[in-house]
Amino acid sequence: MTNLPLRPELANEQPYGAPQLEVPVALNVNENPYAPSTAVIDTLRQDVAAAAAGLHRYPDRDFPALRQALADYLARESGVGLPKEQLWAANGSNEVLTHVLQAFGGPGRKAATFAPSYSMYSEYARNTHTAWVEGEREADFTLDPARAVAFIEEHQPAVILLASPNNPTGTALPLGTVEAILDAAAQVVVPDAPEPNVGAIVVVDEAYAEFRSAGTPSALNLLARHPNLAVSRTMSKAFAAAGLRLGYLAASQPLVDALRVVRLPYHLSAVTQAAALAALKHSDELLAQVDTLRRERDGLVAWLRGQGLQVADTDANFALFGPFADRGAVWQGLLDRGVLIREVGPPGWLRVSVGTSWETKAFKQALIEVMEARSK
Ligand SMILES: *Cc1c(COP(=O)(O)O)cnc(C)c1O
Image (cartoon, rainbow, N blue to C red; front, side, top):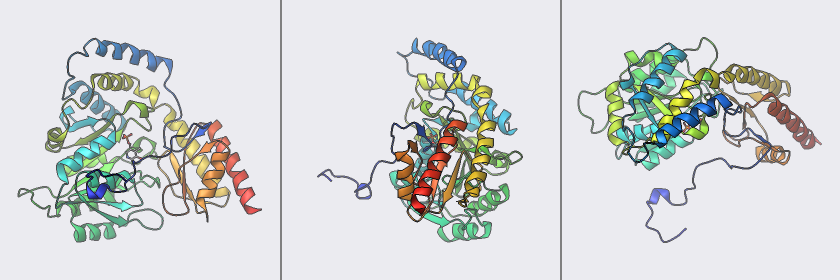
């Protein structure tokens, strides 16, 4: 590339990210398709203006008001009450998860997931000099607890990242599977760790938790019994605030305090804190569309199956479908018709986010045309 003295593991690496194209129907990055209402925008305007009056000062490093508001939200959403000291936040859950790897990964240690899963995980490991290992999901993208436990026993990872619902497949993990992994993680011998210790850290990434089926419990319910568990969430998906950049995590207080050590000073700007608090005041309204999106998703999955396609069972706001002999051609055919989806996941599969009913209609129409053109 150049004559820069780059770290060898960064040679030929490309920046992560889906193409950001201007298209009529963008169903590629699992955003909530509903823009904030004028009521939300008015609160944001007022609260961010108030924060602006104090911008000559550094923000509160520990943002207790925001952590309390996040704890209040989780108590309402999942029924699990936590003190604000057990909450942490950063600029997107991507930064939160980077904090976890900075605190618990590092040279001589490994981090793990079960593929296919979120492709950023291996980048957090790379960026923090942590070795990376990947176990496998089953053919239907579920996790077999016995195989997952055997993998952990074999590789002894210091950090285990589990997305539930998983991206890009939509698969939710039963709490029994998470508990089997937590128990195996507790037995891991983490290199250079003080004795005794809680074993490997298990992160359940619940970026899509609000879309899970009714009656499915959150891994937050396991926090009281498992000091090696962290549950991450984000305002980017169900919360309709991807542009805000606010992710958060719930864990034991000692685990959260470890993340406070590695964060950059004042990492959450006063403007971000004010905007996130303002959005949380409207959480009921921002989440009002989640039920609609869930119904839209179930309809979309049934329709895709009706076309003779396979669709992974999904508890998220997207569906992985296929297989196609040449998924790149299908992706391009849709794009030519103004519909952008994501070419991601195992070979042959494509991922489409759930949009408004109008967007879903446009996607279906475009896919019918593309499949007809290909069968000629
Ligand atoms: C979208 C997504 C995130 C969220 O990232 P933010 O940085 O909070 O926007 C985290 N994990 C998974 C699996 C995701 O798909």
